[in-house]
Image (cartoon, rainbow, N blue to C red; front, side, top):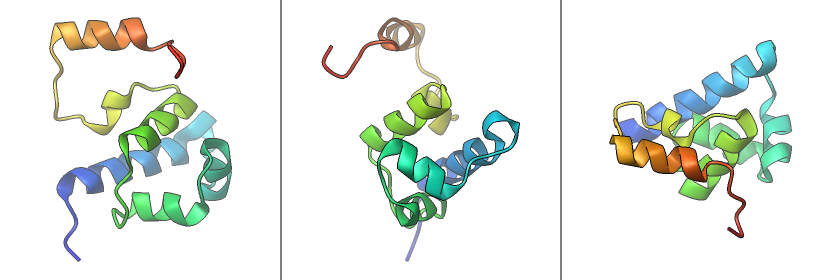
Length: 95
């Protein structure tokens, strides 16, 4: 199975965030419980076997308190897009 470089990079970032969480890390099982998925799914995202949806990345980013853009380091959003992310970052799903 061929894996996309972007999904490999996303998986590496998920693993990095998980392993450095609060200076001691969080297990795949605990992260899965926190974001409402399974341990196998976390593992498969980290190894790029599964491709996380944007909603998954949003839940992960919210849990770790990082912008969703951390999963796409090679993309440099314009100043307008950055302003939009900043302005909408605290909105709830219903908003």
